[in-house]
Amino acid sequence: MESIGELEKANPSLFLTDEGHLEIAWEDAAGKSVQFEFQNEAIEHYREATNFEQVTPIENLESFLLESELAANS
Image 1: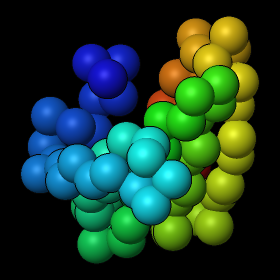
Image 2: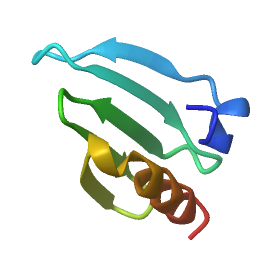
Image 3: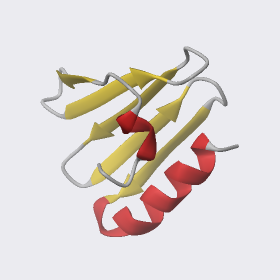
């Protein structure tokens, strides 16, 4: 999570989803929702501002974090 620089400025909330997964969510600088859901074998990422949604297998975590950072800056 340290790789997601936005979290330093955000006040994230941590949730347990109905499926038993952890989800972290916050609002970006424009007040739009940003969500990461940590599933057993994947991470789901959603950004309301750009309507960006992606599911990434856990084994691709490094590329996922890079893509997440790029999506945040676009």
